[in-house]
Length: 578
Image 1 (cartoon, rainbow, N blue to C red):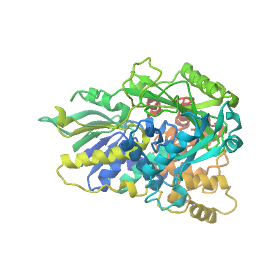
Image 2 (tube, rainbow, N blue to C red; image 1 turned 90 degrees about the horizontal axis):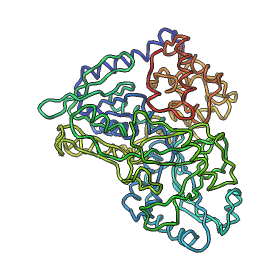
Image 3 (cartoon, one colour; image 1 turned 120 degrees about the vertical axis):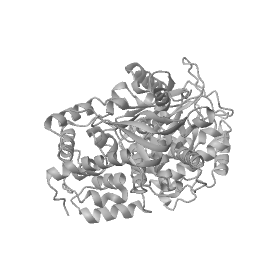
Image 4 (tube, one colour; image 1 turned 120 degrees about the horizontal axis):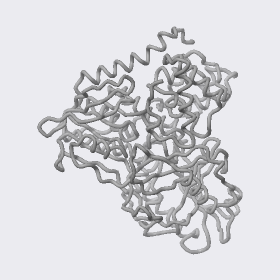
């Protein structure tokens, strides 16, 4: 049935929920406070709450709004680690890919990638076939525990030259002999996965609040007793009491330690990784890896130069990654026109027949990750290999303070598990089994996506287009029925593929504070191309009704979205009153 709440009641509900969370953060004593609501912080909060700890989670901006939102959207299974002879990392990556395919079936998919083969040397079919055989051996359990067959990772295989060119005619080249095809995972909306994990943590009793920054540590006699936090909406400071402080704020973790002046900062080199969104479909339903002019200095068994990858994503094409040493302020991350054009030139050089130009690039994703040791001017770069987890009390810092940085998105859950293991040891609570690897996230508790789609279509009837049903299923999973209890449950937004009720639900029930939270992270409407003025206005009006925004505030929120292209520094997405 449609929602009949008054506008005043609707606008007050999210504010009341936030006020309740702030009151709990101020008045309760927690076992662990997690700083940073990216993939690692969210997984830590969820894991710790499921293991019986009393958990608080805060983020200075929106959940999943920083590096976790800015990626190639690939769940890496670790195939490239074969070149490094790093079997431990290969198996870890494979297991973590499987975990996300299992946990979030509405937000992840298997995706195939072709690697073209050339001649009879190391770039030929024979070495790649041998590598695939090893990959099969080392990842034999890659689908263990994934009941949903549609989420299974198939075995790699070889394509003939004719089969390859039927799919990729633009990639014909001298000495081409065909291709090898392997499978990885793709995230439909990384920020939405993070939010689903945060909501799972809340279900397990964690208190979570976005737009609440950690500005310092509460210390007594050489140990932490919590953090000094600040609510961005009111400007009020609070003292958040906890026995363990887990600084899982990714590239901002060293900056927090420096600001808190509690111990030596983390000396972790950072990589600025960039991926671009091409506003057209360049590929079939398969990605491709193409070699560039740069080498991988860590490879022991090399097919040649490093690959960049192109992946089909919705109606667009993702291309990445472009990496460089980053030595600047993580809060002032920018991407210049020169860097974008340089990457476009690299793509054009690798595959001129695609005709990619700067005008095709509408959205730029860029984030910061732990890097290897590199000279800032180096072109052949050594990448980060392991996530960072530091017990500061064991190295001369305050007791009860730990810090962590995930080496890549796919490893965020595992870092959360290890951080929770460490917290339990420090709290002397004994071992408690981690269950996040096998537990569905919020909305992910189903086995058959087609059955989920049929249930939605039965409810909405034939008047709702298939595109809207797909968006509803792939965004909310099994919680689609909650969305359809809202007003506007049959009204379509100007894009013709999104229900107005989705905006209303995101504003009312998903801790959204800004319009960017809703359209860029909750609903993924503006992450592939710029949004039309009609679509933005419709979303702003609905969000304004739910959050009590004036017409001036709605206009300011729309202007902030427009400033998000081609690249929005995560800091620019923080709350700004209007």
